[in-house]
Length: 323
Image (cartoon, rainbow, N blue to C red):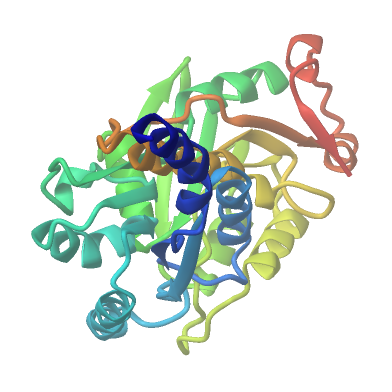
């Protein structure tokens, strides 16, 4: 009889488990769903994550003033407390900076993605936290531009003056405004307003640059404090630059925007952090922090033609081509 009971339990156990309530997750976004980066990493995340009920909170720190950030973080924390999740995912630097310390203090399993700074600047790395770092592939991008523009000597990199850009400067530029990579001088500029951004673009030839890379620019505002849409910045820059335009993010590439670049893939960031969450749920052990290194080589055929740039076969064979 005991043997029959054991057999019955083995048969019904999987069905009983499947009827359990799904795990709860709070996903805190530093930015907002209208930002292409957010939509793309969320798509990658959804493609890999296993059964969770996901509750989203958008901090919207690209568009809202820095003076609001403490209030926003308190609202996000109240949201987390209300949902009482099994896991929290924090997207990008501001979410980790403002919420990470509280989460680690309360020992809530936490995962981050899209973080440019050293995460130790924001939180103590404990057994309750892991995630995926975001690192613009600066050196490899310069090597790529050298293959497309063999005579290039100087490259200007432009970013807005937000926290993410400060983190990029620290990690990719060793906190320097100018570096020499593969014999090319690379100079970084953090820009406060769209008016200043436009001045930098208009003077790129006068300042002696051969190419322009636009990095992080989603937080640009005008002199009155009005947020400038990402798409408007991309298209204005492409229209007015007098040197070939490249980018670090795939959403910046296309007809009427950047030629291309060795870009960070938001899809890859989202998918990889979902895999880490799945590993934690299955094993109970927090996986190690990772850094995706593939990148996505993307080119716009229209912009290549516009600038009369020929892509070497070795690059073309592993590139994604779009309009």
